[in-house]
Length: 356
Image: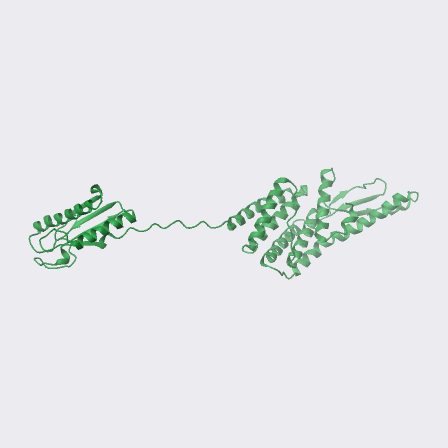
């Protein structure tokens, strides 16, 4: 593409073309800045060469046209920032976030050396007596990001820059997928990832912007990882283990001065076995009790007999003997508080606890 052809492109493509053209010049030994501008014209040299062939005179006219087009493009950097600042963002939350991030990049490059014309490029043809200056790379980046910001402010689709190599193509594919999936739910994160990706791609074309390119690439790597992490489905919560049944719920009662089990008591012990099997409990604790009637020493022995009879019944029902612990506490742990020497049916009991 010739320089004059760049004038017919839209604003974003024109800026992108200029950046690309400058990168080509840098690789071929030319300066790494942007388009040439007429710095000094020796009119006497030009007028003194009236014998120039018509082809060469046409070349001179063409160069003036190129210089005029380039001058118009250079003047767009500051006016683009004014347009960006005056924009009223519309569209989706993603569009508004994209506008904000592109505008920040445009201002950042504008504040970091935009508008400097301090590099020279000598007469390329050798006989025109023309000397060219070059607009700084920052001006072209300001232009590119300003145009992207304005498109986003209008709610138009702004596609990420095309990748320059296979590795960048893989990153671009990840970005396109993530933005398509996440721009609705995570507009700020998606916009930040796209803006930093474009910053990486555009600055990578300019050798003097290698530091900025590295920073943008690092920022994009963190942005895309964060966005993809938010898009992953949340892991289901771990299953909540059922709490073992409370052991104090199982109690059998005895007649006065007895350690025999009734039919009702056996039904309770059957329930104990069923609950232990269903809940996975592997240990059983049995504690025998008495009321306060009779001597304390006798009552302790009686409470042990009551605990042991429960153990035998549980073993008969399928429990492992080694998994059962039996103790007797006599009249020291009453369910109903009474004075000494009082018969109380609720105190004549054995309590069964299921343990994990």
